[in-house]
Image (cartoon, rainbow, N blue to C red; front, side, top):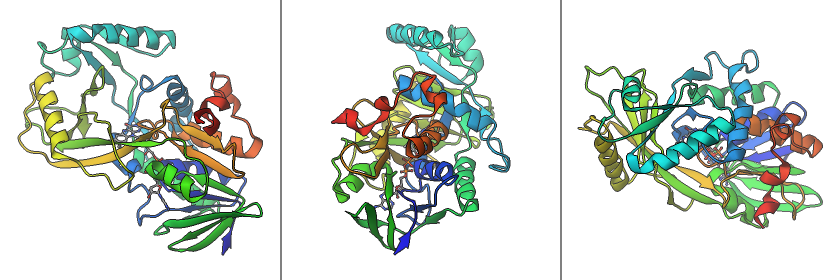
Length: 374
Ligand SMILES: Cc1cc2nc3c(=O)[nH]c(=O)nc-3n(C[C@H](O)[C@H](O)[C@H](O)COP(=O)(O)OP(=O)(O)OC[C@H]3O[C@@H](n4cnc5c(N)ncnc54)[C@H](O)[C@@H]3O)c2cc1C
């Protein structure tokens, strides 16, 4: 039996970023079922940082993460974690009301965003069909995230502070005795007074294993594919381009075009795989909105974005079972919010309070706690 202060289940971005912050003051072990940390949702994202995405709590966590991304600790990563991309939200005539509501909302929060007409939009992304849409919103400071460097930076930093990541360590039983969690995994037995559930799509499965009431987590499959654009097309400067109602999006990705139908199909927790029908829907929407033709899909994948009912992450100590801490439900925003969430986890465990940087932005622990869902 290996003992520590805090055990974390899941070495995706949530588990490793929290472990990194906690290892400042605690002895932490992260248990990961797969051979490769990041194999599930973390390794399958679109790698975008945008302030104009998700509900108000998500937006607060995204804004609060920016400082870490741009000035993270010396030696954390050899590469910048953010690089300029921009985001263009396009709207057809029948979607203009949504566009204007989104504009007013963003402006109320002083987000840098501007409304563009068709000609101005085409200057930014020449692949769009001018007859398809009527206007757009442009967020110039949206960025690509170097997810690999972020995830690796957290892992290396954790190891540097004597934390551990045990891969091939699927947890198969959990018990709570005399104030200690005892976990049996493929790699052996572990024990700690605090257990953090950062198991992504498996969050409610882990809760059930631990005898904790679930929070109603629903994993939803999202599909992505890439294709090679015509050689004469310079795509590198294109922004992420999204339908304002999130019916599809596309962006440049390592010389190819990455596209998604922005599907949200409920799924049991699993190793999600792309369905041909979802790819066909994405191809159809993309070819309708742009002058692009998809002749051959180069690569395709799917991942699970997990949500609870109000689409705000579940972060906090369980209110019914001692020492069980929830860190799930990051939905489609778990990379861009990871730095602030990790700092929040460490502060909640250390002091019982959210960090001031979040409370001054209007976020309260009751917005995040599992108790709100019961
Ligand atoms: C197509 C797509 C696009 C996305 N785009 C973006 C984006 O542009 N920006 C953004 O911020 N977010 C995006 N997201 C969302 C983001 O990827 C997720 O919010 C984030 O990766 C969730 O991280 P996680 O650590 O909670 O989950 P995961 O990465 O899934 O990690 C959970 C880990 O728990 C492990 N685990 C489960 N059960 C056990 C067990 N019994 N024992 C041991 N280990 C266990 C799993 O093996 C897994 O590795 C996207 C997601 C998808 C699918």
